[in-house]
Image 1 (tube, one colour):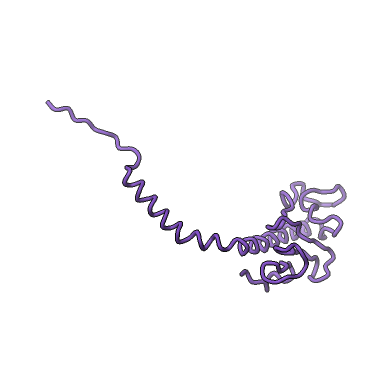
Image 2 (spheres, one colour):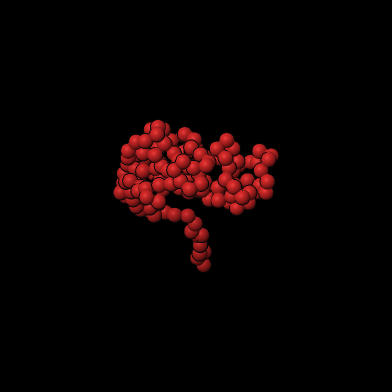
Length: 149
């Protein structure tokens, strides 16, 4: 009588792994150059998204307190109550105040010089007021008209 040996087949064969590696390699050669050539565009878009997120936190702050933080309170008022803000949400409105993608703080001014209630901006890649292309300022009051490169 022959003994039948059954093997539990677990895992992948070398051939299957090689096919997956080849497919991933092909995808990487097609996609990676497109991604790697756009880091500044990604930073610029990230700054626009962060400004929108900060604007949402500012709106929640105003809903609870009836006002926007002053320039002297700054964006830190969205993280913790300095002790004198009535109806402040005890959890805060942001976990922390982000730096822009180039490592600079966002500029916050209230009351506004350019917009309706406050000004919120990043000076862009060069960290200086003004500029063009990726050095251009990203401004809350012009954000809807901004174009991502």
